[in-house]
Image (tube, rainbow, N blue to C red; front, side, top):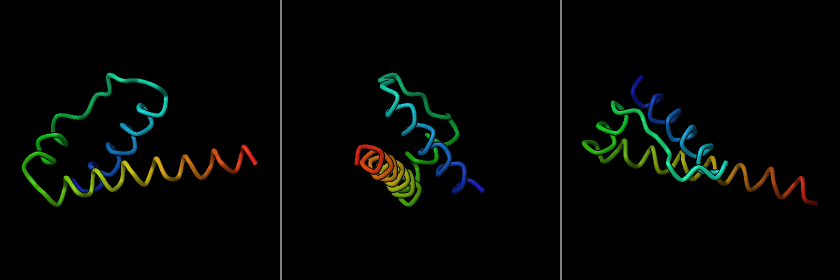
Length: 64
């Protein structure tokens, strides 16, 4: 359950980042889990990067 919250939060933060928002917010419960659990940190970073990669793929297809 918390793993899904971390995944959802990573995608939400990535969306904020892509919209140019430099003041991104993160759920406190998720932040605490990320800071205390190395596996959850990895999940967050991986999901964040995956979302950015998907966006780049979509964007490059639109530009072609």
